[in-house]
Length: 171
Image (cartoon, rainbow, N blue to C red; front, side, top):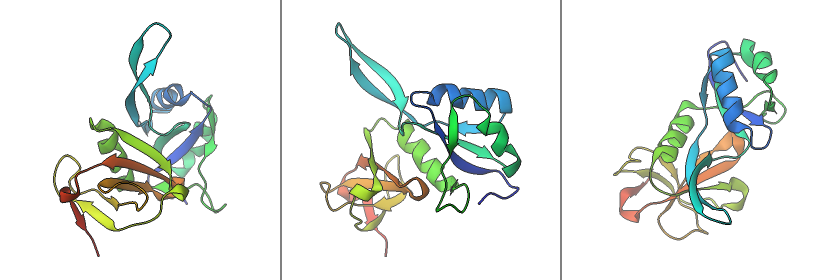
């Protein structure tokens, strides 16, 4: 549930409209936005090309106040907001946004999984390297060393392969 202080929310967009929607919200409403992008190699009939695509398709993140909700909804391409059990718009914690920023900006390959498909394992903290300080879990159905950070309100997980020696189990 939103209060008067700006909070991060996930806006659901029309398919393949994430970049345009994010730009419109930032330009027209002057709100802080975040669209996690990552590079993928795409194959056309005559060539291969590296392109930036959204890490989480059909979502962009907006830091807004309750008064900004209707303005954002009026932006072309915004379908709605992620809601939590019909109690209102789900807010995303600053630490989860920061984790997504760090993962998206890294040179490591990042995978996105729906959290329902992952079994919960040990809760860990990264103790070395570019992700030092991030907390997440190790999944049982992935090979050893997979580090997962979850964005709980969206029911998704971001996965990156890390060496087991940089992970510390948290009680």
